Image (cartoon, rainbow, N blue to C red; front, side, top):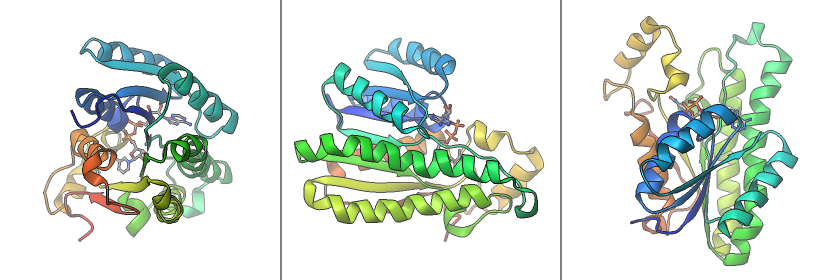
Length: 246
Ligand code: NAI
């Protein structure tokens, strides 16, 4: 049990990578706060996870809204007593070419993927400073490192996640808090499966591993960074991308 009795908030955990991570963290003994915007899918996910044993609860949150984040974190602490781990996993896309991207869709992605990570991290950090320990892991993307056609907003937000991660690692390492990021490549979740089949097939040919990643690959990376095994790991951006960035 690598996370025995640790309280983990995982944002965007109703589906995809967050859901898989909630499952993996519970297997390792964590109490999971499944924090998501989507109440219906979130509650269904909690029901499914509770069926496997372990402790998990749904907390509704819009990470883009500070009041919503503050009350989610307060509710988690009221329920579980503390917070040991934050996984900033919630994210959205609103793709369009630069010439076609609306200001609203640029801002929406920034609000969720960038400001949302800022809100959640700032809301949990005082609890971690008080305890003198904690783990913060945020989700970037290869799009933020090498760019991606149609993803001005998304790439900007995901590059910023790495910048914030390194800044917070420098500020918080001395307080016993590990801050790191995971940089997924293309992983088989709804976000990627919604792309046209032809695009996916062409994409796979460019990945040295010659396959899309599995949600478990990212869950295991979150798990490593959230565990005591990563005690001395600060400010890293761990690529889990089948080698696409080499
Ligand atoms: P997904 O779309 O399956 O899940 C995202 C979850 O975030 C959903 O449950 C959704 O309800 C929730 N969410 C959206 N807006 C929210 C908000 N304002 N407040 C709270 N929750 C909100 O996506 P997936 O694929 O699981 O992605 C998870 C993270 O991994 C995202 O940050 C994504 O950008 C990142 N990522 C995913 C990749 C992939 O290939 N699937 C590749 C690189 C990064």
